[in-house]
Image 1 (cartoon, protein in one colour):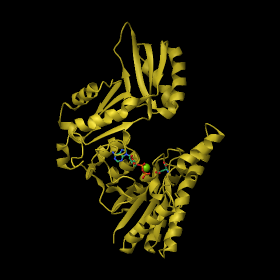
Image 2 (cartoon, rainbow, N blue to C red; image 1 turned 135 degrees about the vertical axis):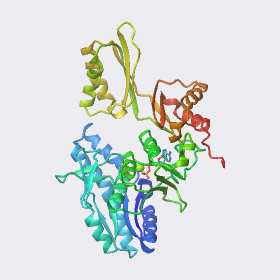
Image 3 (cartoon, rainbow, N blue to C red; image 1 turned 30 degrees about the vertical axis):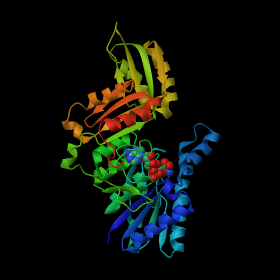
Image 4 (cartoon, rainbow, N blue to C red; image 1 turned 90 degrees about the vertical axis):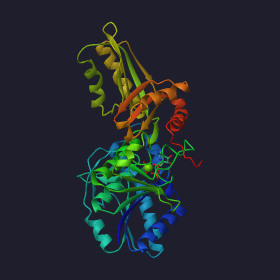
Length: 407
Ligand code: ADP
Ligand code: ASP
Ligand code: MG
């Protein structure tokens, strides 16, 4: 008997018909003698609706109370699944995050799992119950309800699979697996049979929302085999696994994009020791994560400094920099929210040169201007104007020969 953790995303539990299909799938796996823990998201769109409801009251809802509200989305789906399974004659129990003892830190809205006391789930599995756990939520050490950030049910599932030492963690979603790029944006995207944890980490952190980044971190750390596959089809999807030697032969394995960042530039900044610290310390103190940073070369003792922040933090970061500019004597603070980051990812880049040049040439051929560039061992990212995102993704996808030849 295998122990299988299955996670179903919002579109897979969008209504009672879909929940019934999930129940049938779960029942099939359980009926074959396996232990099954099911992790569910809220119904598609529900988390957004709940956020909107709170924002109708105030722009800054109380963070603890917002988490209490958002956790209700997943409470609905686990109970509906268990009611369905019980009505079909299968023994099923739902557990909310705190009942499953998923313990997190106290960062409401973006909490990190610090431990799972899995004894209650194990006891239910020993009694041959199907256990349905509400995704995206946990509790802090004082018992407050916390949520894990958007897409957090992926992380709930992988963390539970690690704690229970499950044989596999299956992530059921609305696409057939992990593709070379977002299949909803690029029709010639190709499904990958396997992808390494490191490549998946880069893909997730650079915008491929098919898996939440923390889920991949957990999977890598605890060696959890993750199988991303379709809720609507039987075919195998993509296995996220430890890097294999032949993976290095593929130079580029994926293209991602993110429209979630905004750019801030300080012009004519006095080029003196301590200035960068004065610019970035208040940003860090406000809890804002800076992504790319570029400082130009000095001209007449002055320099320009540009960086990117998440779009949601842009108004706060702009307000901070207006004060900073005055203090340090910079000329202006300029901002741009209409940007996108496109990235080329592949473990093979470690041993191959020329990827950056090929990427820049492909963008230049389409007259797409590159505003910022950043690189790591296995990725190159360019910030471009947002309106060119789709074009850039498609061009890079074909430049690096990623198309599905069958199409
Ligand atoms: P769920 O609600 O099941 O968690 P998500 O919407 O969070 O699903 O993630 C699935 C979506 O991720 C897909 O519909 C697809 O548009 C998007 N996506 C982005 N990049 C990729 C990629 N490289 N491979 C597969 N899906 C991707
Ligand atoms: N319901 C949450 C969200 O929409 C968590 C998830 O679906 O993974 O972000
Ligand atoms: Mg998701």
